[in-house]
Image 1 (cartoon, one colour):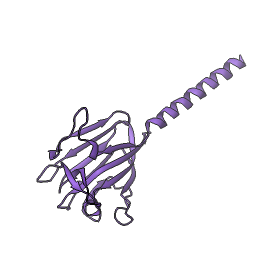
Image 2: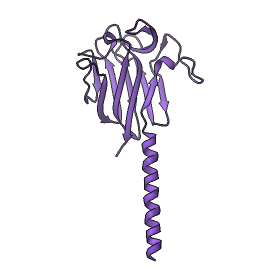
Image 3: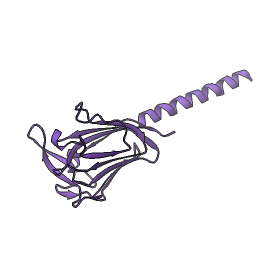
Image 4: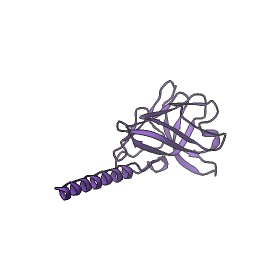
Length: 177
């Protein structure tokens, strides 16, 4: 009888370990490379495409990225922008009043790292709103990484008339408790 109990306990321990390893592998950061959204096999974006209502779903990480015109007069768009090296790069452009939202039904978003085309086109100072607030050093430390813990995250352009231009984001999640 004791051997069967030991074997059962070992089997349960192995199963729990395998399950935790599988969950940890599922929690690899999710990368949204907007400069590569042209030429996708399904749902390719086009330059100057309006993004109001556009959603990108990632099954592996259970993340949904969506864009909305919000209070803005114009819709967010997918544009060719000039980066800090004076090179053309495809980017999402959030105009004044536009929002970008990340959400997950199963996981908590713990970190969002932004790669902007230039510092002038970044979310810094008082030109943006992030919900929930979390921690975001922004331009003060040239680190554009939001950290917190929420099933949703939202960035809104409040006052940057030229638009907040994002060419890449990396999102890190953890299983919700």
